Image 1 (cartoon, rainbow, N blue to C red):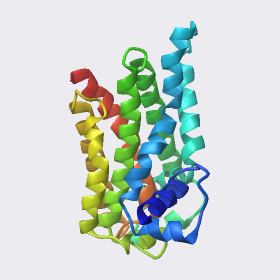
Image 2 (image 1 turned 45 degrees about the vertical axis):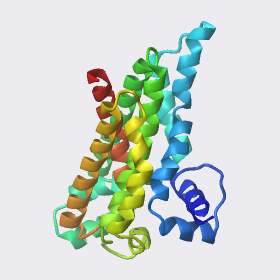
Image 3 (image 1 turned 60 degrees about the vertical axis):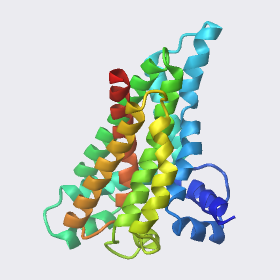
Image 4 (image 1 turned 180 degrees about the vertical axis):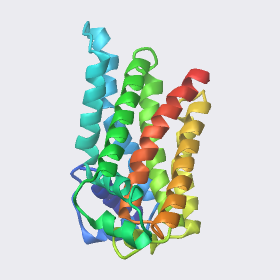
Amino acid sequence: MNALAALRGALGFLSRVPVGHSDASWEAFRRTPAAIPGAGYPIGALLALPLAAIAVAPARGAAIPTETVAVAFVAWLYAVTGITHLDGVADLGDAAVVHGDADRRREVLKDSSLGVGGALALGLLVLGLAAAALLLADLVRFAPVAAVGLVVGAEVAAKAATATAVCLGDAAHEGLGSALTAESGPRSLIGVGVVAAPVALVDWPALLPGVAVLAAAGVVTAAALWWARSRLGGVSGDVLGATSEIARVVGVHVGVIAWTLS
């Protein structure tokens, strides 16, 4: 029962899926990091719908331009997941270019205005996501199962990256980051790993794409934790959100490359 409540809380927090909100589901969610990658499976399945439309279109004699699908994929992704985590990307971009100590960077994170660093970070992320969507739109035309599997796998791995940061990170200040990290520790990684492990099989019988997606998420997590500790003094809600966004984009690119090699 607690697992279902945690999953409901994760879906409500990580997406715009209308599952409702309650104090009980929020408490179950923040005490269960494994629910974060768990929510990646249904979210990833929803995100793959534009690609499924391409796979069906040729059978009906329709030809959907690849570029159109890429734009639709990006728009649909943020319609499903919301733009809260994009705000984290923008805030970290601004903090990254600030001269000063950790206190100064944390002040920038709280500033709602968008600076050049934040604009550049957002632009690079969306550009990377659109490029990833182009790769997936090409792949789905001759390997639909592989393309859909990579979308789901990248989403789960990205959520696992966030969950890992929750388990291993210490909050830099009171807020969303501390609300999540205070309830978890390294032992919670076992549950996160168990939930995320099936990603290795998303393109079965080929194992390289799924393993590559998980490895990419691990690298992004390690980089995010190092940067947060050295530049901010710890993780925050912005760090957790940006980790998921970056890991998704990197995961798709790495997964497609790995698929071509497998």
